[in-house]
Image (cartoon, rainbow, N blue to C red):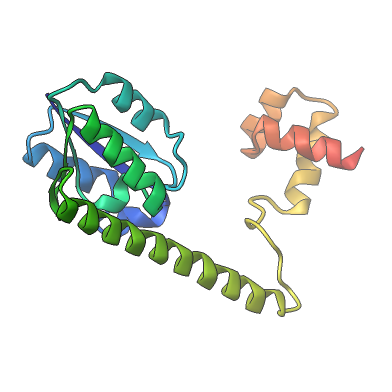
Length: 188
C-alpha cells in the first residue's frame, strides 16, 4: 500500500506552495491511496497523524512525502525515523529527492538535506528572535498576539453577564464563553 504524509506548521505555509492541499495533490498524483496530514511543527516527534501512519505501516508498504522537511526538521529525528522505516521494510520516497534506502549514498544525501532543514529552521528562529528584540525597543511594543477585543468590549460583555447567561452574551457580543471566563477571573 502507498501512503502519503503531509505537514504544515504555520498558516503562512498555505500561501507558499506547502499547503496541505498542494501536498495532498502531489501525493495523490504519485500514487498515495491514503494520506495522513498534520498541522504541527516538524520538530515535534509526537504528531497525531504521523503516529497513526507509523502504526498502520507494514512491511512492503511505501510512504511518500513531497519534501524531506515535511517529515522532520531536525537531522537526528529525521534520520532516525527514516532509518527505522527502512529497517521495517518500508520504502520511503521523498518526491523531490527520490527513494531512500540503506546505501551509504542515500544516508549521506538525506543527512545533508536534514542538516539544511535544521539549519533553515534555526535561522528562522534566530531572525524571529532578532526581530522581536528590535520590536521590544519600541515604546508601544506588546508581546504575544494582539487582543481580539478591546477593554471596552470586554467590560461591556462583563456588564451584560450580570443579568444574562454566557450564551446570551456570546450571541450579543460575539465574545466566546472561555474569553469571558478568563476576563472575569482577571477582574477578580
